[in-house]
Amino acid sequence: MFAAARAQQKDVHSPVPFNRSYDDDNTEYGRSQGLVAKEGAGDNAAPLSITEISALLKRTVEDRFGFVRLRGELSGVKRAASGHLYCALKDDKAVIDGVMWRGGAQRLAFRPEDGIEVVATGKLTTYPGRSKYQIVIETMEIAGEGALLALLEKLRARLAAEGLFAPERKRALPFLPRTIGVVTSPTGAVIRDILHRLADRFPSRVLVWPVLVQGEGAAQQVANAVRGFSALQPGGPVPRPDLVIVARGGGSIEDLWSFNEEVVVRAVAECSIPVISAVGHETDTTLCDYAADRRAPTPTAAAEMAVPVRGELQNQLDEMGLRMRRSALRPVTLGRERLEARVQRLPRPDAILALKAQALDDLTDRLRRGLKDKAGQKRERLGVVAARLSLPLLQRQVIQAGKDLAGSGLDPRLLTRRWAQDRDRLAPFARVLPQLDPRRPLQRGYALVKNREGQALTSRAKAGAEAHLVLEFHDGELQVAVGDEAPVTAPAPTAPEAARRPARSKSTESRQGDLF
Image (cartoon, rainbow, N blue to C red; front, side, top):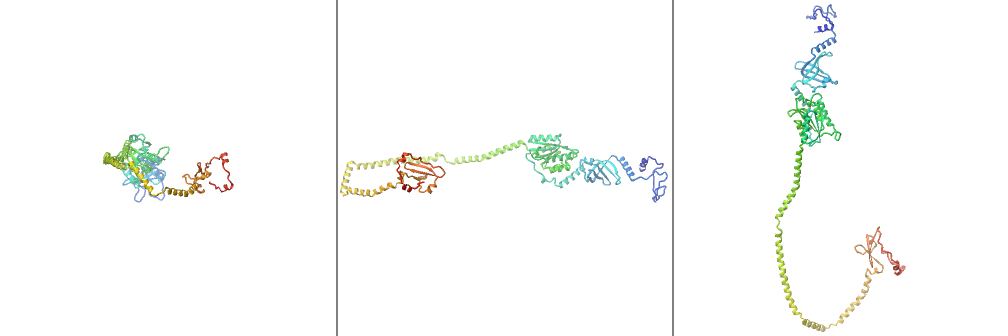
């Protein structure tokens, strides 16, 4: 092989076959080994440089193994800062290094990890820097559904150990969300089923975030959509959903693999809005279902979980209203029943008044008979007295009384003298009595000060404590106000009245006090 490569390089055909053999003494066939390498006549095996032989090996391997598919278990998976993926493929007896450039690594549908059995497609090449051969991987797929399930279980165990699937992290769904965000494909039957079910049960506002649900980039789009809904602020131009539904129709495990990606699971677990996962059919299970707050067997079931039935709510409200009215009227009904029961136990009014009416009739009869008997008795007594009150008998008694009075020796002058003495003793008091009348000075211009109750006020302090005063003159009363209010004054006397008044001396005026 080397001779052929060398001949191709120099385009020279050797006259003898390129074949060397070594004996036990490590000597080349036909020539002894010397100290300094020399080229003999006709020698077609000129020494090659390491770079030349590495290039020849690289070209030969790439020409021979330009397209290969290898199945093996990943080992030593490492992603460099440049984005290139380095790994090794191995089975139970051999191992081969592999490299996947950044463009192909970004298009991978899964995250390579150690222990995953894959089928890698690419070409074999050599790495001169380490004298190794390796495979440059163009595509990498999981080797069979069993390996895919093993990868899924491994990822599930790792995320569960972080607590992303813990039951205590699950949040209750809102009873009646006003806005519902849906992450799904806008062209599939899923969104139509969800909208139709929501319209039947309870019409709500729906925000659809269109994403790819399978294929390259689907997982990143779903994760971005969930994070986008979570980042919306209340009161912003786009209403913040009260509930998020991540939905997709049924399919194989490969079709649903985007919802098993770690980026989607973490986005759902970190979402600040309650999330319903409705991926696949009832028998399909993804890691997104474990991270969501509620799993729905189908997208239609997710819509049923999201909102209640409006008709049932209306019936419940009507029933509660009826129960409330019954509860409010029940005390009235019970009170009416109890009142009617007590009324039935009460005696009839005519029965209550019958005894009193009978007693009244009895008393009326007794009164009538008593008055009649009393009148008869008085009539009899009057007849007896009238018989004794005859005029001749009275005249006779008067004459006899006069005779008895004349014979008693009483002189009427004795009584007359006694009356005269008493009159003379009371005469001085009768003259003084008019002078003691408190209203007698009113005729001379004085006034009597009283309060509203008619009590006389004898001092200035008592008069100042009253808000209103009543001044009584000989010809009537006058009400005045005390304090800041303007007093009611009498009109000034006319000139003739002032002329008729007698002049007072200065001594009299000085002795007269101020009544106010």
